[in-house]
Length: 311
Image 1: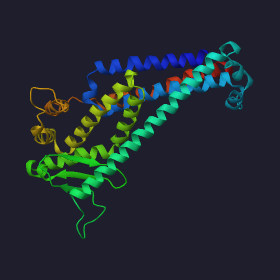
Image 2: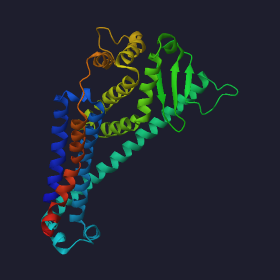
Image 3: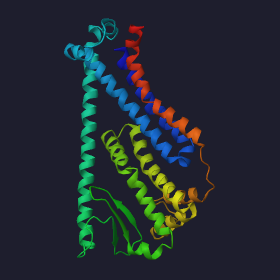
Image 4: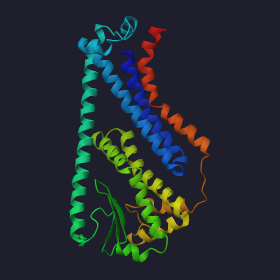
């Protein structure tokens, strides 16, 4: 029972310490793509700790699973993972609890994806009513101009993705600001940010009392916008992208004194207007490599008894 307990302790430690360290750091705002990668590695490590602990606990409780899991292993390795009869009840309870958590996570993900598809179908049906396809128009066209008095643009993902932009946005945005807005939405599509949002929402909704998953969801919503801003600014300039953000959101009251649901927009504009302070390519690569090693730690912990037995 020592290895499964160590894995659970390691997962709890990562779930508590990593979000606090990331919250205190100032570099995620400067390097949102790197921050997205770090967050994914942290959450993957937590989930991997639970999965490995469940597998080893189940193997310690049920001899049939133990035999299948360690069938190709030498006898010394099998003896190294033997936990004894005293650990049986605790191992079984741990395995069952973690298995239920895994099933619940899968169910939440399925629910989130199904809900997103349902909402996307409704938006497509509404879009078809408001902007019907004209004779001779290409049905695979990716750009849809929608009549509307609200300045807005969004990417409608799916099997036939569409970029929707309102006529109010086309009238209000000037010059390359339209291109910057389109590049922002294309950045979301190219990086498949929708899947990040689905996974983070499924974990946060499925385990609302686990702070790391709530922080993961909130940071994904914030960081994907910063990453898309950077993609647009690299193509059309930081000032142009900032002005496009201001023009699109000015009528929504986000720049007023009171709190609004889009309170992050002014911070995004300030970030674009501030002098860029980027990591060097070497430092960025080292941080990405270090983050990639985080999910490897639970694997090493799980294999320690086997490695010692072989040694």
